[in-house]
Image (cartoon, rainbow, N blue to C red; front, side):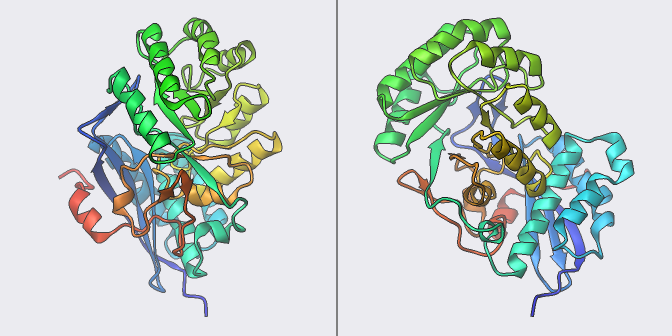
Amino acid sequence: MKPETTIESVESFILHVPVTGDMVQDSTHTVTHWGVVGARITTTGGIVGYGYTGTHAHLASDRLITACIRDAYAPVIVGEDACEVQRLWSRMYNYAPVQWVGRTGITHLALAAVDTALWDIKAKAVEQPLWKLLGGATTERLAAYNTDGGWLSLDKDTVAENCRRLVDDEGYPGVKIKIGSEQPRSDLERVASVRRAIGPDRRLAVDCNGRWDLPTMLWVAPHLAEHDVLWVEEPLFYDDLPGHAQLARAMVTPVALGEQLYSVDAFRDFISAGAVHWVQPDMTRLAGVTEWLRVADLAYAYRLPVVPHVGDMGQVHVHLAYAHPAAAWLEYIPWIRHCFEEPIEVESGVYKKPELPGAGTTLLPDAVQRYAQENEKA
């Protein structure tokens, strides 16, 4: 008999988990901790679902997300059947008082946490990992690329050695490094150094985090092609659709983006304008699994590859990437994996399929105890 899945309670939580080393840096951000900010939903049958979004561990802004979960979305879904996920997503998304104050940003990050927790419950109720609930794996080998060795806070030689170790010793088929500093020529030296270190047969992607302008990128573009760069990620400011479209037409290196887009509508506009080649939806910003699947379907309709941005650090995205035919490969950053009952695992550059029922979001009690922050201001 299927367990009772009526929603009994919705609680919110904030965890701040240390990153690799003391801090990491890209062209726009400096981060010492990763925020795991989310919802814990309990059903009358005793199933507990976890969902969360990823933040830069700023307590004041994290509390805005949990307040939205607790005070805006929870009253809308308590007493409802948690397994009717898409109906509940639509009910929360279209809830007029919340939609009036935001259709992106905080409200979507909060909705992502709740929606993912509902999918976690739905998969647990039928005792299946989420990828299997979604129809099964569309590939037997989901390749991983590693980003955790290429931060701008590291010097050029350290980045090159990190990337060499990741491909030669740990078997990753590719790496991604951060660029986008105030010295483009210096960044190109970093790219050249890494290409020499990993050789011609490994994939190399670069990420500007929206820092450069169009003239800078037009100057940089030919040099990226010289080093066989697979993609340049967020080369321009996130919402600059005309600039990305012009850049995509002007350079050989493909454009990747999506982590700062909050809806299927935004992805539709970038894709239809030819402004993106590698589509990078992130369920932690896209209001959860429900909207992520819509974006992945859209990309598939255009025959564009999907490479999720892992704001969740891969715990949920590994399920989605295995299940969706558009998914090409998946970023790996290990910061928070030790916090979960079934952490993501990469072996010889390939993600292992999760085995436990659910979305891979069940937190360990020890992690909650170690990293929990005060949810409400005293």
